[in-house]
Image 1 (cartoon, rainbow, N blue to C red):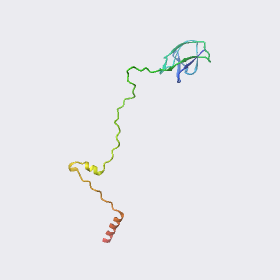
Image 2: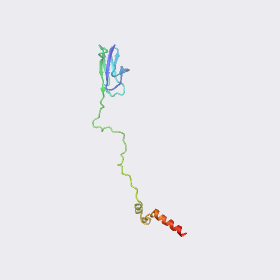
Image 3: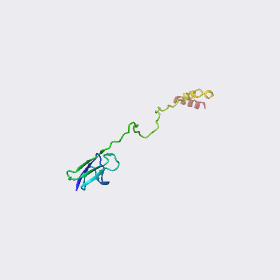
Image 4: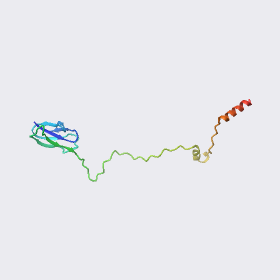
Length: 139
């Protein structure tokens, strides 16, 4: 029995000769001989696979097979990747204020234009007492 340690920065499944054998960071027991190791899908690692002869190892000194994260190829002259395409929004305007009655009337045109009529004054308590007293006396 021989021993192999496959390394990768994150935990991944290790495949040997196309079959799952364990996970990265674990010492895996394998048969002596030539084997092909990879990390399966997604193929975001380099090299894509390692073919090596496994011999003269022990559990305390396994054969170390390193894998690294793959750098994505960038085409020369290609535009940078963009997110989903969305329509540009116009800048937001502050909320509109309500026009006063005088302004509304002033906006009307021609024959429909009316003069602003001042609102009637509200009666005060004193005025209403005087009026109600006058009514009583007059009866």
